[in-house]
Image (cartoon, rainbow, N blue to C red; front, top):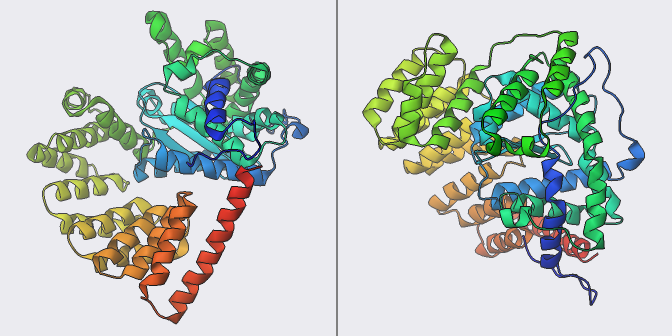
Length: 501
């Protein structure tokens, strides 16, 4: 993000504001972890616990904040896990939760950070972040869903928005930057441990005293969401009990959210009692949960350790076998043991799982063995069975490009891009394919759209100007580029004006 200075003399510059806001608002993310007392039975509607007057951010402002945060995370956060398969799974699980018990028309976006600590957090506009450590630590899909349900509860009650809205006439763009600054400082112990200074910082800290009430609200809403989705509410107390026992054994190494909101046996008993009122609903884990967890585990522990872990894993049930063989294939592939990877993959495929992930893994292995065209064909065949999986589209196009078949890559992405104009990955693939084919105008235009979605308006305008000057394309294409340039220049002027407010 550009460092913009405020225009009025004597006012802190953008960089100074950013540093101060990191110090002042680091605790905001800490209140968003898995938490407190749990709710009434799911037969009752979601409680209206938040005063609407307190949530003075408009829906449009919350959407703007969400867009800014997601751009910063995807394109500037070094720990962002850029894995379409994992994102697709979390989006599916989040949609299942929302459909089961959320009355509001809120779009949710989930992302994963490569971080072995156990944590998750929510931000305005339906943005929810999850650490890889949380996914690996969960021992069932209902446990992971319980965490997400709690974070959805924070969003539904507008907790972050209610705190941030008290900053007066602060713009949505500045509020987004506050949260981006918090994200940037979340793993910096010097920032996280900084002492708050100044009257404004102290005022914000006082507002954070409401966090206990917010946690209780999110818990009450979260359990109802979890139960309403059809997932097992027992996953929530099970997860807390295991964390509590871990904390007692390793007192100085408690998970991040337990250090700020310690669990007690009384609290876990209360959670269990509320779940008994609702009734447990044992559910098998979805295939994709099992495979996503194994994938992240293989990445987090490294090839050699992962091979040892998965080799020792029992294989009595199909889920255990799926985890074992998928994880071993991933680990052997990462260790360049292709013969062993092929053996593990064959065992995985013999299970005939209803998931696109084994096909993607087979494509990755074929490409690693120097067969990118075969890899692309594997992904193409899987699309017929799983047409909604965009990850397979990316897979096919990338491997056609690796095979030197750019026309086939364009065929893979051109259809989806016409129906999803918010997918930056498709535009990047279009740009690569058109560049390989010498279609400079189309390459610059596609790259411009990708930069636009990344929030870099200046770079987007530069690319469209290059497309304009290249002289390629027919009259209609040139007219379309001209119109888009005028639109982006207008956006840039509006953004500069908002930053200067």
